Length: 255
Image (cartoon, rainbow, N blue to C red):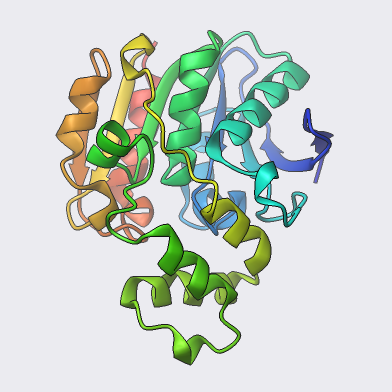
């Protein structure tokens, strides 16, 4: 996998797929614990985009996948990840890109869209009112302390929060670096995002049973002109639904 060095020295990995050079690149940013492969390749999103002729890049965020995994929380947070996106855009030299993010990646995508004019169209999934009310992922569903305890527990049987158990199970299944992920959990974005500064066509995708994406209409209303699409599924399942893929590909196909 190709890599680049972030502005603070962390090595960031990404995957790329060829397509029609006359169409804007699609850049995909995954959610917490996942990586470009598990979030976008396995569910069939990349295959659907390339079948539509699109060039695609899927990044592995710092602390995830094949990217560098420092253990200091100072190296984490969605704001730093947004800077990594901008650094990657500089490297790729693309004049315009379509950007999609899921869960943690949705926060990264929203921050990127407030900072960089090269983003042509924006899709955010797996988030809802928490973005507007808390400035990031909805930590009312699972608090940072409970999540960090679940990530650092030596014995998973000692974890009492059922939602934290699910995150720990996911980490162990993908072989994630629990210390690095705990560092990200300690650094989640929790400041107002200037959503009204996003002027590009935007789509909010939310699973109807996703506890981390409740009241997504509040987020869609906060982004000027954004459209909301509700699809079946919970937080882990919605991104794997064919409806999610269809909505994303169709939205990015618009000229």
